Image (tube, rainbow, N blue to C red; front, top):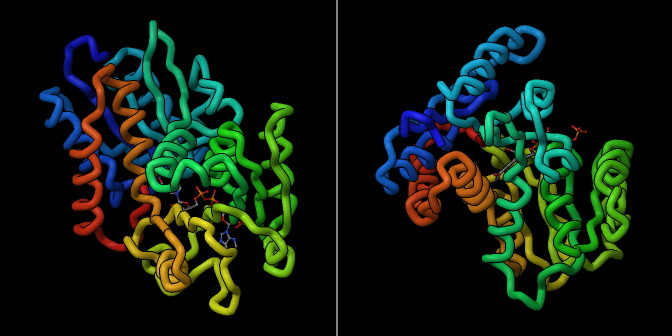
Length: 295
Ligand code: NAP
């Protein structure tokens, strides 16, 4: 908790100006009756951004800043400035939330649990912990794949760069019970699989390229699978529309964004996060947002 009882929160990234996070966390602070603010800290990519990161970490150490979120391109860059990583951040190899505990700066990854919490609120319990295909092998895929593998799912990561998928699987598979496999992103290879869940972890379909979809129109979806698109701008992505037209249940990534914020807010404030107020603020901010925002 902030020593002055004022919560100085924010987001480190580049670019950050279209972020929905200020609206989500401002609503949370107000609903909880806490004093504070959530500011944007634009930090250019390294090496140019290094002096600014030095300054921000000095402020975090002195609690002039209570805690921050971290987004592209700094989710890995910030690791050398931290004292400890949570097991999730360590395994995923990326940090999206930083908080101060007992004079130590801790890096966490709340994308993983944020995704899983939102997913579990949407699918029936009998369809949970089965098989999933994750499309893409970047940072978000790492968090989602880790969350699902930890939860007992059989995870297949399919990427256009098979080596990227293989590296992800090798990094995450250090726990013997995890079931992970890498495949090239070729629909002829995916067709024989019957996953219960498909996750788009690529940026395809994101505004302004809302006509794109990772899933070809001619390709049938597996029967009864749930389609989860990490993209949430536009609110109904082309992939979500395709899935619903095929009679499937589908969701965009706004729930994950809100749930990762819930977890971060609780790390920083030690207060139960007001989920409903945060969901409402996220949806309103998305409606008002300009194209291209995804953080
Ligand atoms: P990233 O690290 O850049 O990874 C993107 C992945 O998508 C890479 O594997 C990339 O492959 C692949 N990809 C990009 N364009 C592709 C294409 N045309 N066809 C096939 N694969 C393609 O990005 P990220 O951080 O993982 O984010 C991915 C998406 O998730 C973004 O839209 C992001 O905004 C969203 N996201 C949402 C949340 C949320 O809370 N809802 C959280 C995190 C991320 P290459 O390396 O070969 O380009």
